[in-house]
Structures are given as C-alpha cells and as structure tokens.
Image (cartoon, rainbow, N blue to C red; front, side):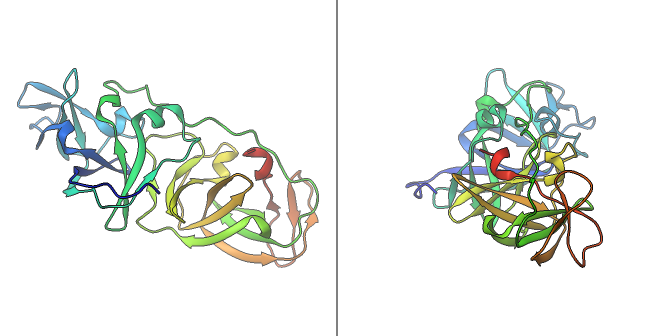
Length: 270
C-alpha cells in the first residue's frame, strides 16, 4: 500500500452500477439533477449513463448528473452521490494486474473511506460511447488430476469446489470493503483489500464460463507469486479424503452430497 499523501486532495465519491467510484474534484465542472427526460442537462448537454458506458446495465433513474472537465465535455448519470471528501490521508491501494487493459486505463488505484472501497477514475480515460470497455482476459481451465489430500470445500452458485489446504490463506465474510468491478463479463467479481494489498476476487463458476456473481464469503488463496480470492455462498469445511468421481477433476468425499470440482489454480494462474 502506498504511503499516505500529504496536503489536501478533494474527491467526489459516487456510485454507478454495482461499483463505487472516486474522482478528483478538479476533474468535475458540475454536479446537478438531470432534466425531466433524464437524457439532458438544461437541454444543452446530452447525459449518458455511466454504468452503460463502462459496460454495465442501465441505471435506474433519476440519479444525479456529473459533468467532467474533459474534451469534449462529458455529462454522465450516476446512481447516487455519496459525499465530497479529503482523500489525502485515506488508505490507497494499487489495482492488481490481470483485470484487463481497459480497466487499467480507467483506474489504477482505489481508496478506502469509511470501510468502503472506491475505484479512482481517471476522467480523461472515460469513454464517450458504450462498447469500448472489455472484460479481463480468460484463463485456460486446468483440472486437478490426482486425488487431493486434505482440502477446503465450498459452494459457489450451487456447485461444490475444493481447494487443497496449503493454498488457503483465510476465509472472510464479504464486507463493505469489497468492491465490484464495472461492466459485465470475465471471471473477476471484484477486488478486496487484505494484508495491505488489493486481492482480485474471482468466481470459480465464472472461470468455467458462468457469470461472475459476488457471494457472501471470500476464500483467499495464496499461490506462488500471486494472491487471489474465490467467491463462496457457503463453506462446508475441511475434508481429509477424496476419491475420483466419473467426471475429470471431480472427486467424492464422505458426507458430501455431490462431487467436488478441483480447479488447478497453480497452472491456470501461472
């Protein structure tokens, strides 16, 4: 985590889609309520949906309008304005790699304020039209072959997954410090500050092609050379013995109702 900044750094905190954002106040010309049709500001500036610009779903109205001091001028509608804060003394985190080139251009860091994480937007990098934000690159799927030893079993999107115990760093409850990423697609559900760094949080089903859905628990994984987390709806605990099931990568354990799928994360993220 970089050291605290000196001086004052006023930032506007706002929410759009499922993500919280921070923008330097010097990049903003105006904050106002949208017009009656919610598509323009005083009939002069076209108002665009920030969630849609960043690849997400349309924002329910009416929200608020933020006008950015960029060329050409960009007016966007967001779900809500949180507050204006001096973020100079707040903890800052660099975004981890692997989140996609588009997001790296839009945001390089995040700030933690009142236990909530806000992605710091670069106003000049904001797209003026939708369709320019792309999801992170896909990871090739590798499955564990040999029967695993003592492993943690968790459920995600109705399916059981297993992780060998030496890879498990910690299991935590997803709290307000978790931040979803803008847009849709890709296997990354969000980022989470832990141990003075931001951990990318993946969805195990999304690594197999399903949507990346945040869930109530985060299983933090310590791989050689990198750290990441996996979403879980519940954690079924440690199991000492596994026997191969019919499908590749799936194993059975006493007391579990369905086979457990083991992804070979070491090879997938090497």
